[in-house]
Length: 268
Image (cartoon, rainbow, N blue to C red):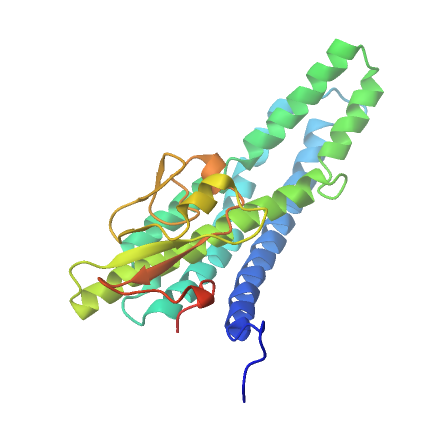
């Protein structure tokens, strides 16, 4: 059967790749938001007790609760996304016992463990605003109560999606990167390469559009907006080049040419 002009023969693969990433984002966002809700439910009565004064320092009383939630609930979701992406590249290696993967996941956990500092900062900012504007204590208490409700404003749901999108694309590309490393070792490929693939739409930042089709050795970083990134979403890069990134990485071998009509279709 002839494919009609204008149809995308790779659409099923593209949709599967998009569905895989969306599923990862939803799982991580849902788990992170559920953990945050539990954390804020503990913090709220401590920081703003009935009839008592506002005490931002009490946020620290519940840091361990948040740390445990990140380690036992959120990071396993990130690990699952990374492992699934890895297995799309190769059967080589063992993600659960891989030291590189363990380091990556520890760093992901460290990034998420900063949330109590973010909560503390929001409370202090509201207290300072109340003092500057001469607001009544009850007004300030109400504002802080709202901040400490996970669903009280759009702030925390939006924050959950930013975390999920950033961590998902990082985990997907980290899994592809590590899988490609071990696959190259298993094949005896001494000079594996990789290629940056940008998402083609108006939301892609200019530096990532410019990086499109950039090819380098697998072991060497891409140069993106002056930053050195091992893969799209590399968390060691600057926030401006990492947060909400939607680019991907394609492992390639020396001399391989790419059919760019399938630029965003997954391998395998």
